[in-house]
Length: 159
Image (tube, rainbow, N blue to C red; front, side, top):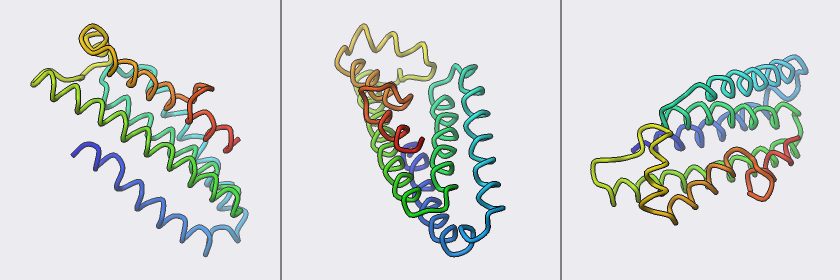
């Protein structure tokens, strides 16, 4: 359920915003500056708030805010290339989110009631499920945009 609520509204918003943007907004330079300002603010605020978060799902929610800011930043160029790059980045983000929630579900199914509620609970995963811990670390590093992972190439294309 959390996965559906984390991805489905973003997908519908992205498609709707793409249609509205290229019909109306891309013709006005003011709206492109407004969108880029909102995107930068989203990236800044989401990143700062995520630094102080201790709960896992809230951390992913702040990360979602940051990533939607990156997508809006790519769309703020007002070109077809910006739209293509934002779609590529959105696809990467959805794949990373799917992997994180699948790993979270696998941990929940093997542990039963005990699940990852806090970020510090990932230490318990390291002790009991080494492979899931490696996959979770790779997914989180890709979400952060560390160079050998796919999230880095999405952010590189945006910039």
